[in-house]
Length: 178
Image (cartoon, rainbow, N blue to C red; front, side, top):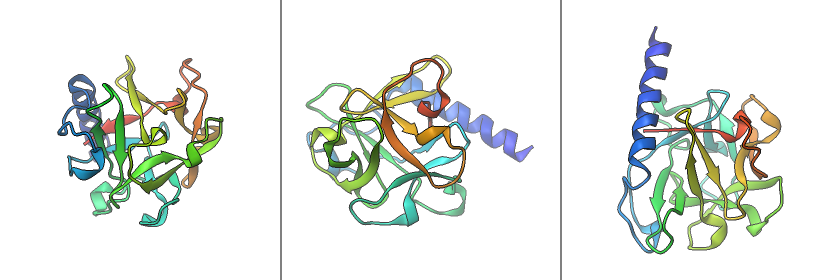
């Protein structure tokens, strides 16, 4: 019962985020200087995006891992911060005051999503595409989707960029909630 109620609340929170957009945080030119509210980003497997090992280092992998928000962990908490200079683009900030980053500015499929010092570089710019099922795709600067590699449901699955399938591929759909 607790699990069903918790999932219902997550769904309601996700719908609230989806209907209000990402403009819940202040709009700034340098997105890395604000402390907006945080969100969890849940995968198809009911797990969350997570900074591996709660690392504060540049280059730390973003993985899929059991959601720990209820246990006081912050490495699965992210802030969605809009850029003032680019319409619908956002930075996704981690608990370590770093940002999600397509490693090395790579435009190819299978490029890893990592944590890196925030900048205004294009490989740290993402857009959300809201889907009719209350979920969202997170698109990278290369027009590709953030993706759970190989549709792996396990903890420690890699988070990568991959060509968007747009055919109900659940490993490129996320629930963004508070």
